[in-house]
Length: 479
Image 1 (cartoon, helix red, strand yellow):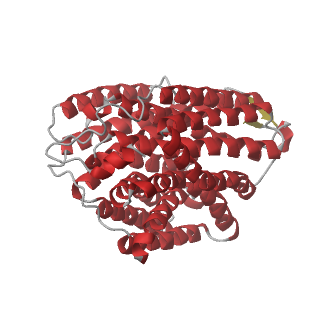
Image 2: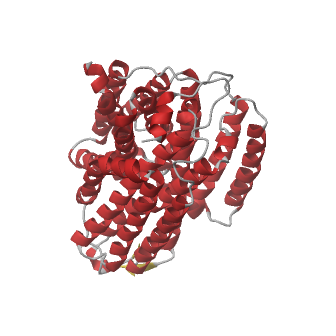
Image 3: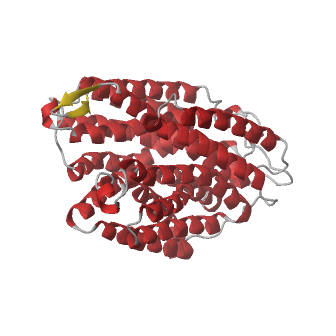
């Protein structure tokens, strides 16, 4: 049927749309204080709110998808994203804008939910390439979103951008409703509300302390209090999850090396990948007076990142082939090593535009291999009725890695500045140091991937209580 053939493109469109929605606000940030009458610190919460809500809602909505239906929860996430976009289009009030961006954070669950639907609906021979494409949509959407948003902001009223994303969001919801079947695989039970609240409070404390440490002061009472609060709350949450019959996150499953080490690798890969986007954008926009900057506009910057997005699209099937031939842990280790090679290129030459684009594209290529392998590792290691929640946790670990990367890069660049005119700007040495740190973390991710037990681990995919083994899982393990 036509609808069945459109399942993969529709889900991929949802993933790209999610990444575009997260990216489009970036070109607006310098002008939002003037447009909204708010301070720069307040405006930054339009990014922070999305980060926090996405981190909290991704594992929660993944668990809800496993319990109540993945298609239903996926559509709900897309609806929340679209409602948030409409709110941004209708208002210039910073409080409304921040609340709207928090709603849009629900879209972070689109990729893990879609990957779980693909596992349930596709035959094994099509599943690997589809999962790889779905994983790559994050980078593809980010690469497309930045230049698109910059063009709209430069040549039209900034609200137009959100009307455009609202229309795309409505199209995405309609397409999922029409083309995607509801998965029959469920894990019934009572939803873990205490676990949800505990995880939410713990993650908010942790990510707030990481993301705001540079502005509030790492040794300040607020940051120290948030760190301590995160440790205490997450320790209590861990204790509660181990004693709950149907926990939000199955920590016994996470403690298995194939799952737990995959999450560690996801955190390290998220750190290594994110530094590329952060540093490249700042580097090419730096004024020429610095001696290394190219003074590019935000539109030109977006175009510099575009080859990386195209590369991610082209290399997603390559990742699937490598995983089928050698196993996803080898693909993950190779991808992380390629990321490190990309940073080596950046360290070798970050003055010439073509070398900057080359290095960034190599990092994107490695990210494609790594991000495509991570969900395949999870799919092979967990029961079919826990794939959405397990992949949600994996995406959460990437998000935490990205937040730590942002804080680390900011700290490095703040401590390596020089005056250009009356403005303090990062030095080239600061950028190179950031590249070196990201490259070292990528190598650590590669080493972590190689410690993951082989794909043909004894015992295969674990069973769930009272559930028979899905024969398609056996076929997937043999792929």
